[in-house]
Length: 163
Image (cartoon, rainbow, N blue to C red):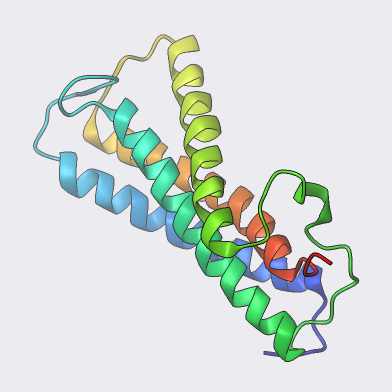
Protein backbone atom coordinates (compact mmCIF):
# COMPACT_ATOMS: atom_id res chain seq x y z
CA UNK A 1 0.00 0.00 0.00
CA UNK A 2 1.56 3.23 -1.10
CA UNK A 3 0.93 6.60 0.52
CA UNK A 4 1.86 8.11 -2.83
CA UNK A 5 -1.44 6.99 -4.39
CA UNK A 6 -4.23 9.50 -4.44
CA UNK A 7 -7.71 8.64 -3.19
CA UNK A 8 -8.86 8.63 -6.82
CA UNK A 9 -6.17 6.09 -7.74
CA UNK A 10 -7.23 3.82 -4.85
CA UNK A 11 -10.86 4.08 -5.92
CA UNK A 12 -10.02 3.44 -9.57
CA UNK A 13 -7.94 0.34 -8.84
CA UNK A 14 -10.33 -1.24 -6.34
CA UNK A 15 -13.36 -0.49 -8.51
CA UNK A 16 -11.77 -1.95 -11.66
CA UNK A 17 -10.78 -5.13 -9.81
CA UNK A 18 -14.22 -5.59 -8.29
CA UNK A 19 -16.05 -5.01 -11.55
CA UNK A 20 -14.04 -7.81 -13.14
CA UNK A 21 -14.31 -10.17 -10.15
CA UNK A 22 -18.06 -9.72 -9.76
CA UNK A 23 -18.76 -9.90 -13.48
CA UNK A 24 -17.00 -13.27 -13.68
CA UNK A 25 -18.08 -14.82 -10.35
CA UNK A 26 -21.74 -13.85 -10.54
CA UNK A 27 -22.00 -15.01 -14.13
CA UNK A 28 -20.40 -18.36 -13.30
CA UNK A 29 -22.56 -18.87 -10.20
CA UNK A 30 -25.75 -17.99 -12.10
CA UNK A 31 -24.92 -20.38 -14.92
CA UNK A 32 -23.84 -23.19 -12.59
CA UNK A 33 -27.07 -23.03 -10.59
CA UNK A 34 -29.44 -22.70 -13.57
CA UNK A 35 -27.75 -24.61 -16.40
CA UNK A 36 -30.16 -27.55 -16.13
CA UNK A 37 -33.16 -25.39 -16.95
CA UNK A 38 -34.45 -24.75 -20.42
CA UNK A 39 -35.60 -21.20 -19.63
CA UNK A 40 -35.41 -18.91 -16.64
CA UNK A 41 -38.50 -16.77 -16.14
CA UNK A 42 -38.77 -13.45 -14.33
CA UNK A 43 -40.78 -14.81 -11.40
CA UNK A 44 -41.59 -18.25 -10.05
CA UNK A 45 -39.61 -20.91 -8.24
CA UNK A 46 -36.44 -20.52 -10.32
CA UNK A 47 -37.19 -16.95 -11.41
CA UNK A 48 -34.47 -14.38 -11.74
CA UNK A 49 -36.49 -11.52 -10.19
CA UNK A 50 -36.00 -12.61 -6.60
CA UNK A 51 -32.43 -13.67 -7.40
CA UNK A 52 -31.59 -10.11 -8.46
CA UNK A 53 -33.06 -8.60 -5.29
CA UNK A 54 -31.21 -11.09 -3.08
CA UNK A 55 -27.94 -10.66 -4.98
CA UNK A 56 -28.32 -6.88 -4.96
CA UNK A 57 -28.66 -6.89 -1.19
CA UNK A 58 -25.93 -9.43 -0.42
CA UNK A 59 -23.38 -8.11 -2.91
CA UNK A 60 -23.88 -4.48 -1.89
CA UNK A 61 -23.76 -5.31 1.83
CA UNK A 62 -20.59 -7.38 1.52
CA UNK A 63 -18.79 -4.86 -0.67
CA UNK A 64 -19.96 -2.00 1.55
CA UNK A 65 -18.76 -3.71 4.71
CA UNK A 66 -15.41 -4.76 3.28
CA UNK A 67 -14.48 -1.41 1.77
CA UNK A 68 -15.81 0.80 4.55
CA UNK A 69 -13.85 -1.23 7.10
CA UNK A 70 -10.73 -1.57 4.97
CA UNK A 71 -10.44 2.10 4.12
CA UNK A 72 -11.41 3.25 7.61
CA UNK A 73 -8.41 1.25 8.93
CA UNK A 74 -6.16 2.60 6.17
CA UNK A 75 -7.19 6.16 6.99
CA UNK A 76 -6.56 5.68 10.72
CA UNK A 77 -3.11 4.18 10.02
CA UNK A 78 -2.24 7.04 7.70
CA UNK A 79 -1.93 4.74 4.68
CA UNK A 80 -4.26 6.92 2.61
CA UNK A 81 -3.91 10.67 2.43
CA UNK A 82 -7.39 12.16 2.38
CA UNK A 83 -8.56 15.63 1.45
CA UNK A 84 -10.99 15.68 4.37
CA UNK A 85 -14.27 15.77 2.46
CA UNK A 86 -14.49 12.14 1.27
CA UNK A 87 -17.89 10.60 1.92
CA UNK A 88 -19.47 13.89 2.95
CA UNK A 89 -21.90 13.95 0.01
CA UNK A 90 -23.78 10.91 1.37
CA UNK A 91 -23.25 11.61 5.09
CA UNK A 92 -26.94 12.55 5.35
CA UNK A 93 -27.94 9.09 4.06
CA UNK A 94 -25.38 6.62 5.39
CA UNK A 95 -24.55 6.23 9.08
CA UNK A 96 -20.90 6.53 10.12
CA UNK A 97 -20.99 3.15 11.88
CA UNK A 98 -19.91 0.50 9.30
CA UNK A 99 -22.19 -2.13 10.88
CA UNK A 100 -25.15 0.12 10.10
CA UNK A 101 -23.89 1.60 6.82
CA UNK A 102 -23.12 -1.74 5.09
CA UNK A 103 -26.65 -3.21 5.35
CA UNK A 104 -28.10 0.17 4.39
CA UNK A 105 -25.93 0.10 1.25
CA UNK A 106 -27.30 -3.42 0.72
CA UNK A 107 -30.89 -2.22 0.95
CA UNK A 108 -30.16 0.58 -1.50
CA UNK A 109 -28.42 -1.88 -3.85
CA UNK A 110 -31.40 -4.24 -3.79
CA UNK A 111 -34.06 -1.56 -4.14
CA UNK A 112 -32.33 0.42 -6.88
CA UNK A 113 -30.29 -2.03 -8.97
CA UNK A 114 -32.71 -4.98 -9.19
CA UNK A 115 -35.73 -2.93 -10.32
CA UNK A 116 -33.52 -1.08 -12.82
CA UNK A 117 -32.52 -4.31 -14.58
CA UNK A 118 -36.00 -5.81 -14.28
CA UNK A 119 -37.44 -2.61 -15.77
CA UNK A 120 -35.06 -2.68 -18.73
CA UNK A 121 -35.89 -6.33 -19.41
CA UNK A 122 -39.62 -5.60 -19.12
CA UNK A 123 -39.34 -2.65 -21.49
CA UNK A 124 -37.63 -4.95 -23.98
CA UNK A 125 -40.44 -7.48 -23.55
CA UNK A 126 -38.15 -10.14 -22.09
CA UNK A 127 -39.82 -12.41 -19.54
CA UNK A 128 -37.73 -15.56 -20.04
CA UNK A 129 -34.05 -16.14 -20.75
CA UNK A 130 -31.80 -19.09 -21.41
CA UNK A 131 -29.49 -19.89 -18.47
CA UNK A 132 -26.48 -18.70 -20.49
CA UNK A 133 -28.16 -15.39 -21.44
CA UNK A 134 -29.18 -14.82 -17.83
CA UNK A 135 -25.66 -15.61 -16.60
CA UNK A 136 -24.18 -13.06 -19.01
CA UNK A 137 -26.75 -10.42 -18.07
CA UNK A 138 -26.41 -11.09 -14.34
CA UNK A 139 -22.62 -11.04 -14.47
CA UNK A 140 -22.67 -7.73 -16.32
CA UNK A 141 -25.25 -6.32 -13.89
CA UNK A 142 -23.22 -7.47 -10.86
CA UNK A 143 -20.09 -5.87 -12.31
CA UNK A 144 -21.93 -2.59 -12.82
CA UNK A 145 -23.36 -2.77 -9.30
CA UNK A 146 -19.86 -3.36 -7.87
CA UNK A 147 -18.65 -0.39 -9.92
CA UNK A 148 -21.21 1.80 -8.18
CA UNK A 149 -20.96 0.40 -4.64
CA UNK A 150 -17.16 0.19 -4.25
CA UNK A 151 -16.43 3.93 -4.75
CA UNK A 152 -19.28 4.86 -2.40
CA UNK A 153 -18.02 2.43 0.26
CA UNK A 154 -14.41 3.59 -0.07
CA UNK A 155 -15.47 7.21 0.34
CA UNK A 156 -17.54 6.25 3.38
CA UNK A 157 -14.53 4.47 4.83
CA UNK A 158 -12.45 7.62 4.36
CA UNK A 159 -15.14 9.83 5.83
CA UNK A 160 -14.03 11.88 8.83
CA UNK A 161 -15.39 10.83 12.18
CA UNK A 162 -18.40 12.94 13.20
CA UNK A 163 -17.66 15.53 15.87
